[in-house]
Length: 334
Ligand code: 2RA
Image (cartoon, rainbow, N blue to C red; front, side):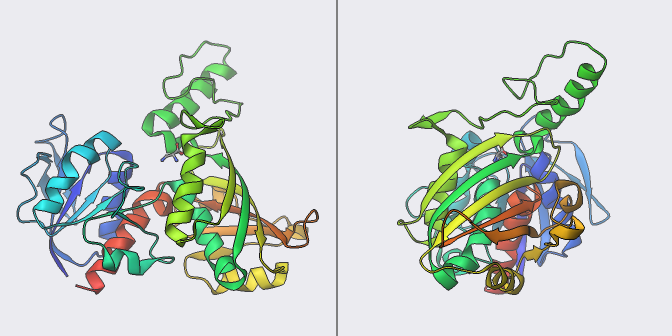
């Protein structure tokens, strides 16, 4: 059991879910502290029925804590988390800053738990669009080695923060009443639209979000030979990312074998009954900690190909749940 868990970024969109999960899952710790920027410091929150005062995040605030779970923007994670490691804390980071750094473990507990247990410094939680895809790829990779992945994402506005979802709701209302709306989180209207750009252009016409899906996948699966061709699209859905995934494996995997592999793997639930229109939907996966898979079928263009549809709550398994599960894994191995 941890002695004192510091929840950093406790008031943000993901930080709020981290708090809820720590309560719901009865996280094994004696004490909890909640830290945020100077703006929120001093305000109160209730956790497990007790009132806590939010403390200001500073470089010397980590003394006395043995685990830090941080959900902050990249620049904050860059500036403050090394001090937490120096103070002797185990550190779980949900930002994008540390993920691909040498010596930083990038962990999905169902996929590469040992990397968390071997970590000497920061343990990063992957980007949401990577997490659900890699969880789905892992049983296929173990059974038949994934060589290539073609993935298109349908990403919810909550991935762009609280303002992303405010833009979806307020922009939709404005659109329906014929009014103008100034979008703040997106460069184009998201209401009644799709935007084929998440993040800035990084290289070769791919965006930062897309290249995360390539490089993070290779790091988590420990296999730099895997080819990934991603297209990341923002869609007018409030929460839960969906992905259309086609994989090519070294030997063919039949849809039946894939279904059995998915069903046997922790963290995955299969909903796959096309004749009865049963498959995962953002509306039904919202609030769940699982990764849902459906529409499992042969890739009719490739004898070694398999296609499927994958939906998960990007704020939970894509962020908060994964981080809390890493903490639970560390707690079991203290
Ligand atoms: C998004 N993946 O959906 C990002 C959030 N980390 O925009």
